[in-house]
Amino acid sequence: MRAGLIPLLSMLVALPALGGAALWRVYSPERARRVAVTVAALTLVLALGVLVLFQAGGAGMSGMSMVAILLATLLTLGLVAAGPRQMLDRGTLGALLLTESAALGFFCTQHLGLMLVFWVAMVLPAEVLISRRAKAQPEARALRTFRIYLLAGSLPLVAAVVLLGLPGWQSGAETPLGLSELLARGVPAPRQTAILALLMLAVAFRMAVVPFHSWLPVLLARGPFGAGLLMVNVHAGLYLLVRVAMPLLPEAWKAASPLLEGLGLFGALYGAVLALAQMDLRRTVGFLLVSQSGLMLAGLAERNTESIAGALLQSVAAAVPLTGLMLVVRAIEARTGTTDMTRLGGLVRRGPRMAALFFLLGVASLGFPGSMSFVGEDLLLHGILGAHPLVALPLLLTTAINGITFLRAFQRTFLGTPAHGQASVLDTVEDLLPRERIAALALCVLAFLGGILPGPLLRLREHEVSALAGPAASTGHAESGSHGPALASH
Image (cartoon, rainbow, N blue to C red; front, side, top):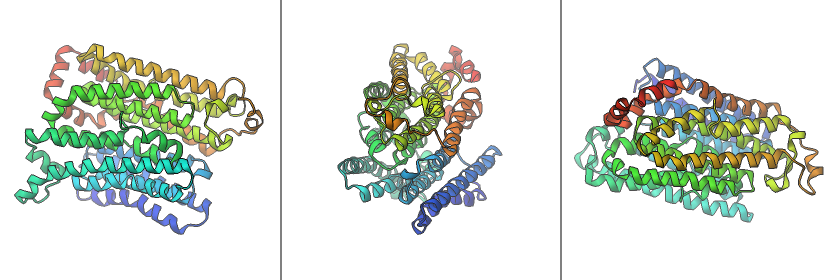
C-alpha cells in the first residue's frame, strides 16, 4: 500500500470512533445529532478522497475494499441524518459511529489478526447499548439472542485465524497473518477443510444465513435503531469470504461449493417464505435481508464470473434500498407508534411522499427493471443457469415470493381503510420531513442509477471477480459465449 495513503485511511477509521467518543461529552440531544451528522458526512468525504486515489491507480487497495468503504460511510450518514429523532439519542448515535469505525477498519486492513479485532469490535457497541437498556422483556430477549450470536460468530473465526497463522509463527515469519504473506505461503490442502468450516460458521452468523439467522429479525425489531441494519448491510461476512476464504482455501472452497450453493438457495427461499408470513414491517425487512444473504452466498458458491459479479453487485443493490425502506418503516413507527400491519392502513392519504418512496425503494430492492438489483439478479441468474439450469428455479421462486411480500406490505400499510380503532391516530400522521425525504430519495436514486449505469461499480471489482472465478471458469464462459456478452451488456 502506498505510504501516502496510510494517513488518509487512518483518519478514515479514526474519525467516526473519535466522533462517537466525543458524543459522551455532548449533553444536548440536538447538538449531539449535529455532531454525529457532521462526523458521518466528513467520513464520507474522506472515503470519496480514497476513491479518487484508487481510480488514479495509487491507492494500493482492492476494489472490494473500496466499494465496502463507500457503502459503509453512505449508509451510516443516511441512518444518522434521517433516523427518527426520538430513536437517535446520544447512545445510539455513538453506537452507530463506533460500528462504522470498526467496519472501516475491517475493510482497510491487510492483516488477518486486525480483521479479527475489528470483526468483534463491530458488534460490541450494539451489545453494550442493549445491555444498558435491557429492562423490559423484549429488550432482554434481544440481549440474550445477540450475546449468543456474538460468541458463536467470533470464536470460530478466532480458531481459524490461529490455524492460518500457526505455520508462520512456527517458521518465524515477520507477519504471519498478513494477507499477502498468507497467499504467498498457501495453506496445505489437508488443513483447508477444517479452516473453511470455521470461517463459514463465523460468516453464516454474521450474514444471517439460515439456520443462523434468528438474531437479525429480533435485533431489527427490538434492538437499537440502525445497529443491526448497519452490521448486516456492510456485508463484512461476504467480504471475509472474498478476501480470505476463497483465495486462501481454493481446494476446500471448490469441494464445498455444491453444499454452500444449496445452503444459500435454501436460505434465500426460506427467508422469503418467513418474510411473507410476518405482520410486522420491521421483521419483514429483517427476513428480506436473510433472503438476500442466501442469494449472495449461492452466487459466490457457483464460482463463475457472472454469478460472483452478481453476488457482489447484489450486496450493494440490496443494502441501499433496504436501508432506505427501513428508514421509512421507522418513520411510520415514530408517527403511529406501531409497525404492525394489522393496525395500519390508508396512510397514503396522509403521507403520499412516504407511500411513494416506500414503493420505489421496495421495488428497487426486489429486482425491478432499471434498478441495480435487477442487474445483480440477472447476473446471478445467468451464472447459475449456465451451470445448473434447474438450480435457478429456487432463485426465481424466491424473487416472486419477495415481490408478493412487498406488495402485500404496501397494500396493508398505505392502501385500504385504517384498521379498526386506529383511524383517529392515523389521521394525525404527518408526511416525511425534508431530511427524511432527502435521505430516502437519495438512496432511491442511487438504487436506480446503479441499474442504469452499473459499469463503474462492476469495474471496481473486476479484478477480484476474475481472480476468484479462475481461468477455468472464464474460459468456459468464453467458449460458451455467455460471459463476454452478459457482462458487456451491463
